[in-house]
Image (cartoon, rainbow, N blue to C red):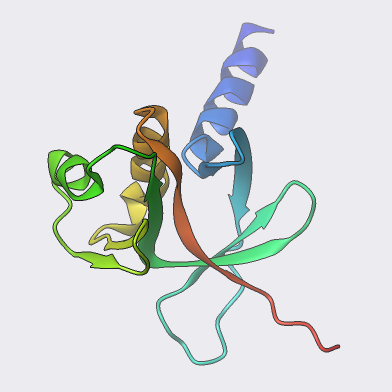
Amino acid sequence: MIKIVLLILFVLSLNANDSYYERGKLVNLQELHNFRNADSSEIKYFKTNSGQRLGITDKILVKCKDGINCRALLKKFLLTDVINLTDTIYSVKIMNYDKIFSLSRELFESGDVEFAHPNFIKQRRKR
């Protein structure tokens, strides 16, 4: 029985890193290893618990709370490849895909940002 519990905990811990905060709630993702992008670009695809397919790029989108110097905050996290998308939203390029979810969670959990999540590419649908 103990072996089964340990195995379940191990499997759950493997997927624990593939999560992000959306509207303050943690969203878990499952990587789609066999899903390939049509143009072979560097996009990894994941599926939410609700079945929605999302692709991620090598960027995190960050919006800091009012009164927070976002550039200074990002510098504390050793993030230097920062682009202003608007006056309040920044795009941050990440060199290591493996850290994109943990870094976005750390930024959100700092309490200084309204949101921090990977730059998602949603599946196109015909209208």
